[in-house]
Image (cartoon, rainbow, N blue to C red; front, side, top):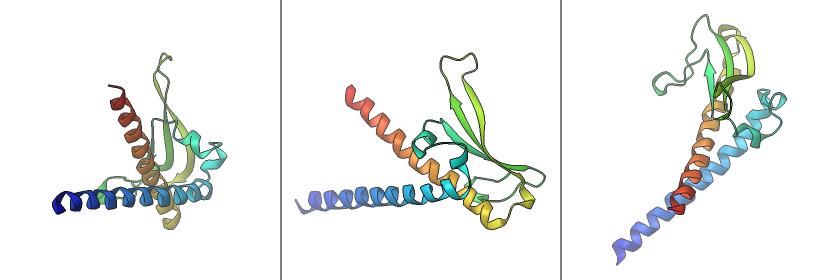
Length: 138
């Protein structure tokens, strides 16, 4: 009996930990949304999550070299919009352009990387909720 109770306790702790991490992530994402100028292009935070994905050019998002600049490239945040009724289903939309990656201040570049990672973190929760709801319909 204590084994089952212990597993339930661990699961509850893990869920509350994720919810707290998600709440903190959203607060910081809202700050970055304004700080790096995304609010000028996307009118609301909710509208950000209508995009299929957000990518970054000019800087690596790979775990092993996260934030490393790609010399000679331009730093840009790109959103991928998807329209299943259009002839061309997906389209890249520039959300922010910052010029040559070498000329962007390192601390500002780090905020841009943080914004994209935090967006993806929240987007994964949204996707999780979506698929959970689909499974409940089965």
